[in-house]
Amino acid sequence: MVQRAITSGDLIDEATLTLDELARACSVETDWVIERIESGLLADGSPYVASWRFTSHDLTRARRMHQLERDFEAAPELAALAADLIEENQRLKDRLRAAGL
Image 1 (cartoon, helix red, strand yellow):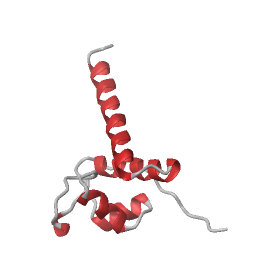
Image 2 (tube, helix red, strand yellow):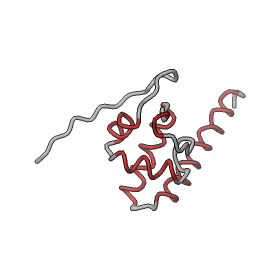
Image 3 (spheres, one colour):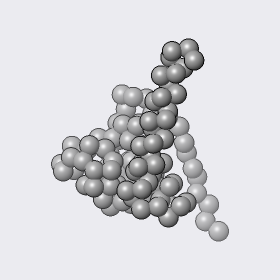
Image 4 (cartoon, helix red, strand yellow):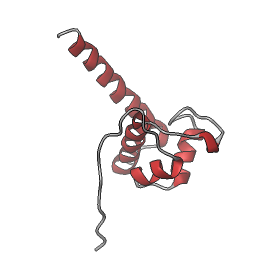
């Protein structure tokens, strides 16, 4: 049985990750990340690999998409849509909280 150490945490907003770091943090291959970026499902879709830097938001979204694809055998586009809905739900909750409701 293979045992893997799982590390989790939150990145501070100023910190960024490289392509390899993001892939490693999500336990995916770099090709997985590149395919989603080129499809416009992750990050900004920039074609310039050398300039790719990923924020904590990108990390959270990539992990969420990977989990949806893995656990529910969701197509990448469906996983991205579900991630969009989860993110929008969180933004609305934050607005309600800020309004004191």
